[in-house]
Length: 188
Image (cartoon, rainbow, N blue to C red; front, side, top):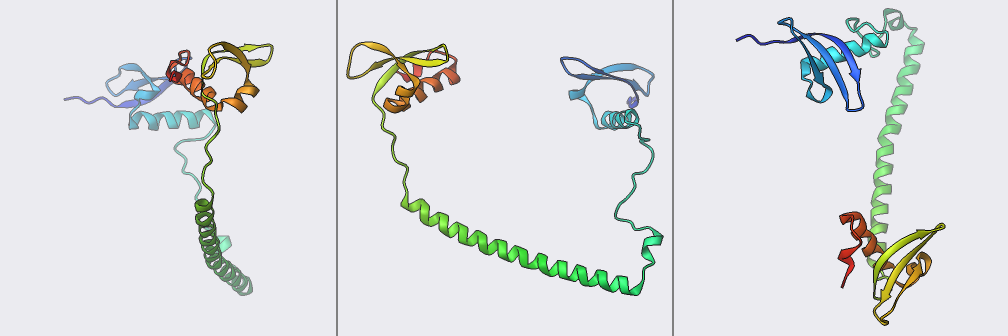
């Protein structure tokens, strides 16, 4: 059984639909693949292609920052002692820092545990009503509302609704967002 492998990335194409790549395969065929369908082998070729476009040689090894050059290894004994002392001081300060953070975190958690028990959420006062519609007119938002204590409906400003019946507004808007309808879920 012949298994084909991608051997070259020929072209990258960016569309409004997405990104596609044109690959040459080991059996000399060519195909166009969407970015979402790329395999590991294809991704390696894409990475090399992008590096070449940025002006880097994908075959060139990356410099390793943690390896010191020979010239850096030859130092004066005094300089080495000074660096050792500084690193020891740094290590000690790093050891102390987590302890301080842990103590601060413990004291914070004790404070939050004490405060959460003392203050409970106060229920919001809301006049029972039914919001039937909403309109936006000259920068003002108004709701067409029927309060349960009266039979007539009237247009009420957003500010007034915030004071009188904020829960009804929330339920109406949630119904609009959730279902895209006219707040049908708000009827009681």
